[in-house]
Image (cartoon, rainbow, N blue to C red; front, side, top):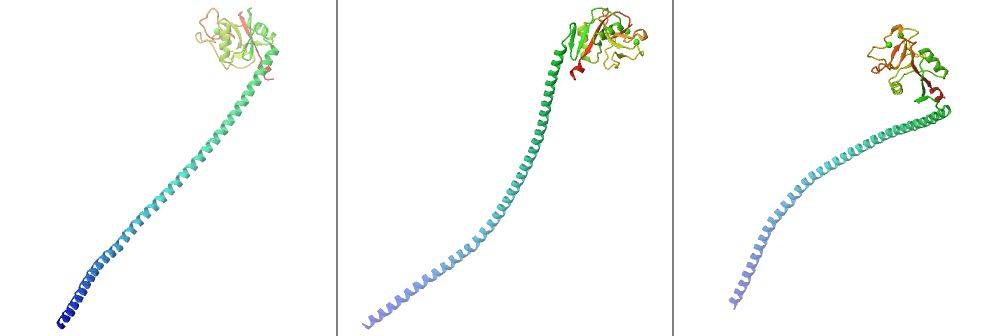
Length: 263
Ligand SMILES: [Ca+2]
Ligand SMILES: [Ca+2]
């Protein structure tokens, strides 16, 4: 019995010690695992935040640079838009002013034209074209049927309130060419006073010339001091010819009505 008790005691102590050993072994392993895991977690916890912080800093710098660039671009774009708007506005203002000035000029010219047309009509109504006269631009023209010398022809024109024709534009020469049909008529040009110095009947010098070139007119010297439009016997000649003043030709009178229109 005492032996059983002893064995029981021994067995119980042995079992208790074994149990304690097992628990201590488990604790040791757990401690070792804990130490390893904790170190790993520490390492993980210490390295990961460092890597994460550096990446954020680079990203932040890039973001800031991008924002700065974007702001600069916006400022440049805004400046360009403002400059462009000012430029367009200035140009538009200039164009508008020029357009207004031109419109004003056109309006004034139109009014002047209308007034001239009315004045011209009034003058023509007052004067009325006499029988046997032709109206062209601002003159009346009379073509005689009979023939006289240059001096008598000029006198006849003066009796009619006119004088021999003065041709001073290309248009007027074309008109004369048309109405004379290459026939000879006295015109109001002479060098009777000073040989070679041709003057019109109103004393003015020659501004437009239409001398016949084939026969090198004027070619008559002191023998030919008066001028006809053409020579009927030489229709191939195309311009003025000086001839003796005592020749007998038809004549053209001209009555300029510009002074009446300007009243
Ligand atoms: Ca002459
Ligand atoms: Ca001649």
